[in-house]
Amino acid sequence: MEQLHSRSATLDTLGVREQARWVSIDSFEAIPVQLRVDADWLKSLKSTQVSDVVIELQPVLSRVEADRVLRAIADLLAQQEGEKLTGTGTDFSGRYWFRGKANQKSVRTIAKEFYSVQAIHAPLFSIAAAKGKPVPHRPSISIQTPSVPADPKGLPCVAVVDLGVPSDHRQLAQYRRGQFVPQDAPRPPVGDHGAFVASRVVFGECDSDQELSACVGRCSFYDAMVGDYPDGSGQSNRVNDKIVMDAIRGVRGAAPDVRVFNLSFGDARPLDRFPDVERREKRLMLQDLDNFIFATDAIVIVAAGNSPPGVVPNPAYPEHHRDGQWALGPWACGFNTLVCGAFVSRISANGLVTNVGWPSPFSRIGPGMCGAPIPSFCAEGGNTDETFKYQPGLGVWGFSGTGLAEERIGTSHAAPLVAREAALVVAKLQEYCLSGTQPFGVTVRAFLALSASKTTRDATVAELAERTLGLGKTSCTRIISPTNGSAVIIWQGFIESSKDTVRVQLPIPLDWLGKAGDPVLRLVIAADPPVNEAAQATWSCRKIKAVLHLGPEATYLRAQGGAHETYPLMCREYSLSKYAPGNDKAAEGDLWLLELSYEEVFAYPPGMDFDPRQRVAFPAAPT
Image (cartoon, rainbow, N blue to C red; front, side):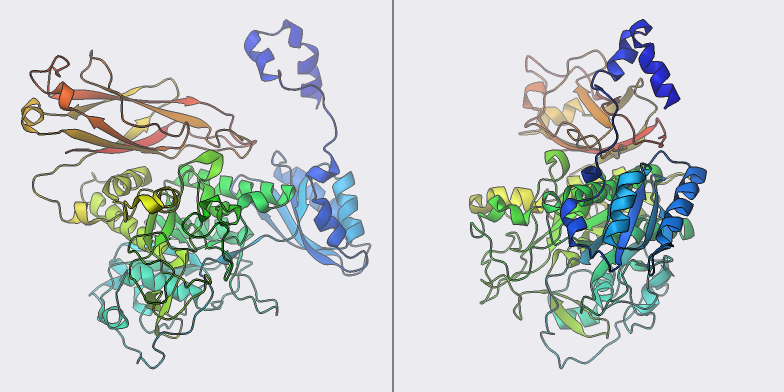
C-alpha cells in the first residue's frame, strides 16, 4: 500500500509508459462484499446451522501472511459451536484456500472484515460427463478376459483423472500403470464411471460387445482419483474440483513420462449460468489448468460435457445451437486443452439422429472462452431418443466396474478416444527425437489437428457441427502407417521472447509445384501460451504470429479464411497455383520461409512469473 501511495503521488513526473499503466485507475476503494460472496447463496445459509464453505485468499498473499489469516479465521470460528476449518490447500497459481464449516453470520463477518479474502462460496463440484447410467444392453453376457500384450504397462499411457478404477478389475488391472489419490479424495472407486472411461482408453472404439471382449489393448492408464465422498444424497458421480489440479500434478510428479490426461467430467450448467463469485472461481480453476499445461508441457483432453438428462432443447435438434442451455461448461472452455465433442457413429431405429456422423444430441456446444473455436475434436459418443434419454442400442461400448460389456452414452466416452490417439502419437514421435528431448504437447496437438477429418459435410447441420465437432475425428494412423504419395513436415521449437522472431525454412519443391494440378499447403500452428482470468477479451497473455513468405526476401502469402485473434491453434490453407513456375507470381526457389513470433497482449496473473520462452510447433502438408 505504501508503494501504491508513493507511486501515485509521483505519477506526473514519470514517463508516458508508466502513466499509461495507471490510466484505468480512478480511485482505490475497499472491495464490495458482493464481489466476494454471492448474495443469493448467502441468504440460503441457515443463521444457526453450519454449512460447508470454501474461503479463497487473495492471490498475492505469501505463505506467512496466509498463515496469519488462517489463524485469525480459525479463532473467529472457534467461538461458535460446530464451526471450524477442516482443510487447507494451494492452487496451481499459488493462491491459498481453506475449507470448513460456518453459519451465515460468520460467513458475512468474514466477507466484510477480512480483506485478505478474495471469495467465499460453497464447495465446487463437477459431474462425471456421462448421460445418466443406463442398464446393460445385454445383461446376460459372460465376463471375458481379453488377451493382453507381453508388457501391457509399457504401452503408451493416459492418466484417467476420474472417480477411480477397481484395482482388481478383470480386464483393466493388467493395464494399470499406477494410482494417485489426493489427500481429500476417497481411496475406493466411487461408482464405475472411471472404469468405463479407462476401458475406452485401453481398448478404443468397438462396434459390439463381442469385438470389445476380444480386443487387445493398445494403451495403459494411470488412475488419478478426484471423486468426492458420497454424502447420502444418492449422487455418486461428483468430482471435487479443488483436488483436480492436485491429482494432475501428483501424477506428473510421480510419473514424468505420463503426459496425456483425460478429464471426462464437466458441469450441469454452462459457464455463464453461474453466480458471479462462483463463475470467477470456475474461471480461476480453468486458468490454473491452462497455465499448468504451459508450465509442464502436458496434453489435457476434456470432455465437452452433456446436456441435462431428459431436457429437450428449444429450438429442436439440429437448430438447438441457439439454446443457451447447451453452451459449454467451465472445464471445457480453455485455450490449451483439447476439448472433445461427440458424434453418432451408428444408426438405430429408436434414435433421434438418423444420419451417421451428425453431432450427438446431448453434446454441449461452443464457442469457448472469448468466442474461441472450441470444441477442438470429436469422437464416437452415442445417440438419444426423441426425449433426449438413453435407449438400448444407442450407446458406445466399454467395460463396467464389474467387467460387464455395456453400452453408455456421453462425451465422457468420446474424450478417451482422443486421449488414446494423443498418447499413441507421443510414443511414435518420441522415436524420432534425440536423446534427452521429447515431442512437445503442442506438436501432438497440431498433428492431431492436421489429421482430423469432418464426420459430416451435410449443410443441414453445418453450424451445429462446426460448434460441436470442431475439426472432426482425429487419428494417429497417418504417422503410424504413412501413405505413399503424401508428406507431412513437422517442426517444433521455442520463441525465446517477445522480441525474438524464429525463421523456419519450409521445402516446397518447384518441380512438385509445377506438376501438381491444384496444389494446396495445409499448415497448422499450435502453441500453449500463459493465460489470465482477468483478460476478459483475450484470455491468453500472448498472441502468436505466423507469416509465410515465398522466400527470405519475398512477399508473404495470405491464407484462406480468418482465425481467432488469440486462440493458440491456427489452421491455414494456402492455394499455391499462382506460385507455380510460369506464372507472374512464381516462387523463385524450393525453400520458403515461415516467421514465428509472439507479442504480450495481457499481464500475467498476480504472483506468477512465466518462462519467456514460448513453445510452438507446426505440421505442414503440401497436397
